[in-house]
Length: 418
Ligand code: HAM
Image 1 (cartoon, protein in one colour):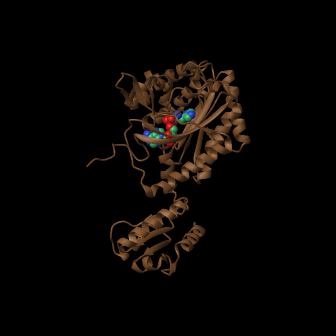
Image 2 (image 1 turned 30 degrees about the horizontal axis):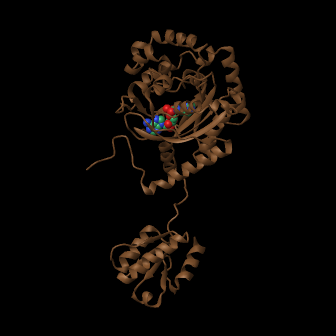
Image 3 (image 1 turned 30 degrees about the vertical axis):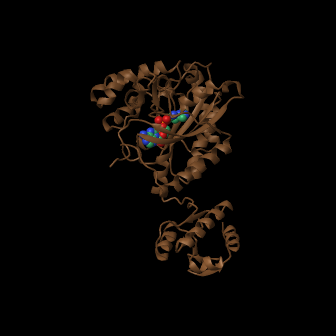
């Protein structure tokens, strides 16, 4: 027996209502804020990701699904959604459009991670990106939009953490200070942090191991080392967030796991759980388009894991709209009736009435059981008698009441119910 690959899941029909709810909420949010959908391929040139996410990151070193195709092209399954948006922005000359260009996506993301609750090797992200503007009011708008997304879904009590990690100009000095501070602590850190000390010192700050966590407490804060421009930007974002009444907390530990970030970074987490359970995160990436071969173009975005959102909806028992069920099941008894039943089903669908036709040659009782199982409101029954008089018996599955009608009257009645 085959099984879905480790770290992947099937989204079964009974789960679909959660997913539709998340998707429709996301689409309405994007309409409200003026974002347009962009779909990019599931795989890209692997270099697009190694160059943008960063050579020293977990994603690039351990988690990418990289493969060579039959022509020798080195490709990677999309491990995140921002770099493909930037690639498409450049490829399609969106820099010639009025800026910022506001785009959103819902897409499968692939990361070879250690699977656990809420962490998969294939997951879906809903993300949005505003490309082409460095105005701090845009940072606040993006953060507000992310916050509103969870509000719309009914997921409340979340923590929103905000930080600034500076830019190319001011970060080197901060990293130096950080390394100086960590130099005397490095022996006591976890194995991962020992290697982060050389490869990616910023990530020392968001390690969740208790030995490392304690050390972060007194570590130098990036916001104390910002250059003039980054400081003004940061203070301005904070000011806008306060004015918009977004309840955020500043966190000097928040650094994010991708190297392209500059200035503002933020993350939304359920209370009492670590960063592994983040419902979403994002930030500014003002150098990325430039690094991918475009002209310097500031940008900011956010993405949220849809599985984690669904898990939260379920955990909090949030009511989501019920799926619509076909209003009518069509049952028959005997071969002649079967032909009439197939014709009736076809006519109903032509008239836009969803209908489910019985199959096989089962007893009426078994057919009614199936209708109940599907949640059909009515069952249309065609037996020998009905065939003879050219009519159909309609059974209300709730009350058990039955009436015999001409097909046209039945269609009219079902159309009204629909
Ligand atoms: P990220 O923090 O790596 O950011 O992922 C965004 C969100 O995707 C996470 O907060 C989490 O909800 C979800 N997620 C990540 N990995 C997994 C996983 N293995 N299983 C389930 N859910 C997961 C980014 O990818 C950036 N591209 C976000 C961004 C957009 N920054 C700017 N624009």
